[in-house]
Length: 470
Image (cartoon, rainbow, N blue to C red):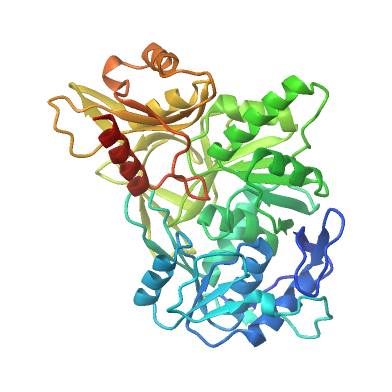
């Protein structure tokens, strides 16, 4: 049996977090304030002593540092942290109906708190620094620490149980493939929240288990991302999604036309996930920032499983410790020592060598129109190469009454770009059967904070657009 391990490994003076926002009793001036691993442990133990009793903790903290402190304090107390797929009061109450004895923990940011559940504000604590004279608690590997939930981008959101062993061992593997092989502390700025698995693994857990420092802010708009990067110590990394990256690079291109001499802050590594990334976008990011872009493949059930340098190759490098086993139905089973059971992947995988593979789309993405077979992933790849696109997706609407079902698209186009130009682009690269009809233009797609587009929200938007056009 694996032995218990420290809640905070190496509680020393190395930076674990970079604060840009003041907390009660802890003022931040200038570009930011470093929090050492020892100071973080002191904060965790102080909160653990103050948290009300509860079996489950619904963590709604917007501040990434307080989110981590609250999660680690809950682990220290043996409580299970629930990471809701969204922040709605109805979602909180839904979790409480499934998981007994829930406490909502938040950081005072204006939000929709359920009046039916007990809550605790972290703003009630004093966050001033103090010496920690206690040793880090030892956590048993089998202790259930977190229950995360899938985004719902392919259907109903599902729970995923994460033990302490899963958090620790997956983070150690992730660090080998996501971070440069050096001893420097890399400051991790993320455009995604810590409550979702992509943000949790990269912007939160790596800070505890590797040479990375969490950054508390979550900039959304391109100008804020650039400003936040410029104020971080080097080396700095960016954790983002294809949706956020496209907006950032379009903003930079527009700014460069007005101010050709302005340079983007240097980024050592950009980590990108949650949707397929176009190679041209990856190449542009590397050219602009001077560092590598590493696209990560994974799912909520398993976590991160592979990485690729998308600017240079379409082949993925599977993480050592993750096993892929082909199944008779064409699907693939993923397994690893730190998960209780194998997981069936939705993606179709073609193995090229011991550690290299390519993705052939999802099993649910395979489509047949007018006797012709294709892949939604391939169609969306063509859509995303359209230079006038801000955001968009092609999908198969449900319950079509026409004799020959058709794909549909909902897009956000740059100012001055027309649907005719987009349609001409699609016709140039796709068989006519796979050119979406209709194409709807909107001001924004209903994406979640992690950049994903829940299927339920997309279909609701499509239905409303269809009614308006009829």
